[in-house]
Length: 399
Ligand SMILES: Nc1ncnc2c1ncn2[C@@H]1O[C@H](COP(=O)(O)OP(=O)(O)O)[C@@H](O)[C@H]1O
Ligand SMILES: [Mg+2]
Image (cartoon, rainbow, N blue to C red):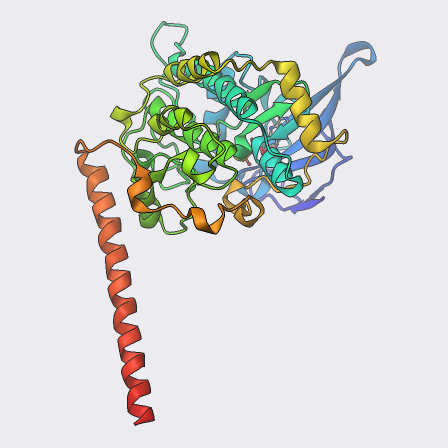
């Protein structure tokens, strides 16, 4: 796939055709594997001394945005956060730099699949992940998040890192079964909420309610989004499909138990997942490590064991032996829910089976949810009025 760029700033102004197979500084771009709102991602190769080749992943700021100050700052923030983290469950960044006026990150190339790709392929082939496999992925992500949330700077002061975009497209599982968090593109660090004011603050289907309404969010916002991903991996369906942000907020306050959505799931797992999905952060797990431990306890009590090698086998089961890098667009917002299994009709979830326990007031959030409810009620009333008018008109015409 090629993308044509025409950078509009700096002395190097010239239209460029960035095609895989092309040289970008000392990197050979081998394959285009993703593109989001901010950057393009390539599998690339670079040569070290004495003909030693190294495969890397290049994330390069999108040309039209290179001149956009806010997006540039966001990219720099991503580099800053990623550079401060060294953990087995976080993709390591090798270098941050500028080539031909474009900022880029060179990082480890993860030979594997995003959770999004795994879920879509599993849905297509009806080769779903087992409960133990979904739980394994969750514990590994939580391991990385716990580390990032606790990370301190060289001066010993907490860095207060919050990823804020833990989505299926931003977590990869390598063909060896390693789980890695990517994309600190909108991460917060040191209490800085938004480098780019008004820019995307997380994906609507995953974001924690407090983050969605612009309130201060800490590590518990990442616990929430990991809860949504786990819920989806276990139930094989999207949790929040509402396009309207207010309807989405309201849906967060009444989430069905996983075992009701998919009855083969053990009911004893419900509370482990739902605690992460409490709309009010104070009712969730306090730390990512607590969520991880709750899953470990559950696995232990139920005699479940999962290893990296078993995870690698699970991927082979889902994908077969060949890999399909880049075959699926990176944007999870459009994850086609119709490809994920819908619950059978007769198991429609009723309000009485829905659960979320928190009821303590959080003013901003409560107001936002109440607002969402009012808007929905207004919608229903308008709909009813329309039906009445149409009915009356039909009656008049007929008589
Ligand atoms: N280090 C990596 N190794 C392999 N694939 C990667 C890597 N980083 C990103 N990708 C792929 O590129 C996609 C987009 O990368 P990401 O960092 O999430 O960018 P964006 O900010 O555009 O979402 C990912 O969903 C993944 O498919
Ligand atoms: Mg991403």
